[in-house]
Length: 112
Length: 118
Image (tube, rainbow over all chains, first blue to last red):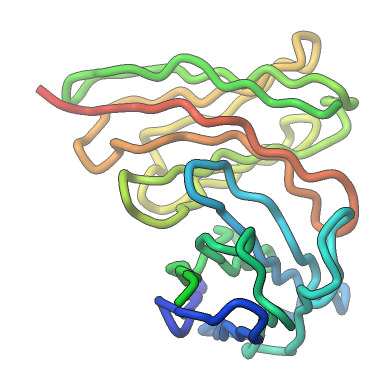
């Protein structure tokens, strides 16, 4: 199975400052069709998860443009340009290239 | 709007069985693959199973393979997860989810809690 490793696992951030989360996969996430099926999810406290980013860098509908995704192959990053209070929660990367799909451990974003 | 509602959770003894259901509405259920994802108390997300739109292919996490069965009834817009030989480590909130490979509406249910305990 593909192992997804996130860092850091805890990220205290000052409001208005940027934040960055790394996600590394144990093997390439490039699928035979040329796409890379790397997703980012946000889970706010007490809520169900919500997808933010699909195929590395594409924002889902309604996701603020302060969220951006980048990377390739085995190395990916989620960035928040200016953290707002509503961004508090746990962020997960998830690969959908290889079965079984697998999540990272999660990164808890909190306000300093 | 797109909505998923899970049901069927509860308390079950180790070795017991439970069937979860997920009622879908607001989209053409028969056109989409569907997932089950779980979250143990205070822990992260764990992908559990997937079924293609027509039920032709199913995939499972190693941790549940041979014990859990995913299925669907497109005439009832309902997704199922049959869970047998339950263990304490299966205790979790179980979510059904519509997660397209690419663009498109994603949706998660509110989750249903399964507790395996004697």
